[in-house]
Length: 353
Image 1 (cartoon, rainbow, N blue to C red):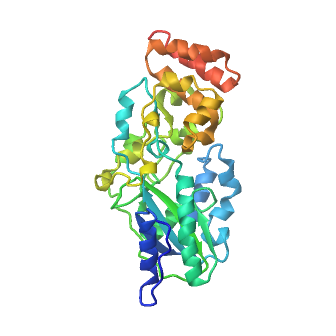
Image 2 (image 1 turned 135 degrees about the horizontal axis):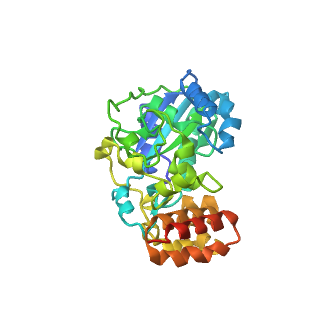
Image 3 (image 1 turned 120 degrees about the vertical axis):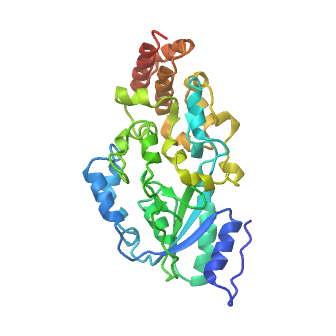
């Protein structure tokens, strides 16, 4: 897995990199130019101007750096875009039929993809740097680089009407990583939009977070609310979340292109049993140490215990299960005021259950 593949002077260097990427567990490896103009800068500006980024102030403060890959790194000439499939072996929408259990987004039921992918990207980047003699930089969703427009330019997929990437070969379940290189590398052909007249993803959204196709108002998105938003939610959105306590897969799962999706081959990305539909009562009982122990390898750990338990209490309020009311009542004395507010709301919702 980690042995370096030699470059043959008679071989296409791009194909050698693709073989190395496959050996590292990536399902797709394609190339794009990093210097041409693109429309992503204008789309981002409209998104921020409309206030659709909500409390994610970092999107505004880093807007200039996000505008183009060379704004992030002036020496960038090429981008190698990697994709790793995390397709689930179940339809995540089925979890909505178990209101006393938690729906955790598929990508967070396995190991944190940031930690998994970054090391492998560095391995591939090292091969590229040694062969070209040019500097490289690695990105996995933690720096102000817009990966999805680059992935579209490289032909990995296209940004669908839900603004996420869709692949004709892998559907919607794809983690992205990018290597920027100062070397000039022949690009692959870009992908075109294959959404057609379909609106399945837009129709599936439980909170009507899409004001128009290809536009997302993050302030209404359950992924934003459960993960990025720190305070209490508007009450109508609390009721709409159902039992989704971390992220939401509805718009992704609704995409018809998922008929070509595959189950993740990387074992560390597959759901751990303890994170697949865990009981809400068990999650509500977590203290900080228990939270960190349960989610030590998962992306869920980044939001902390208080924000997570807030989400769990909203789900308890939506459960219609009177046996969960004492669980919520015990948290009305929690040290965190947002947790207390959520507990009071859940108890009120369950009064007549």
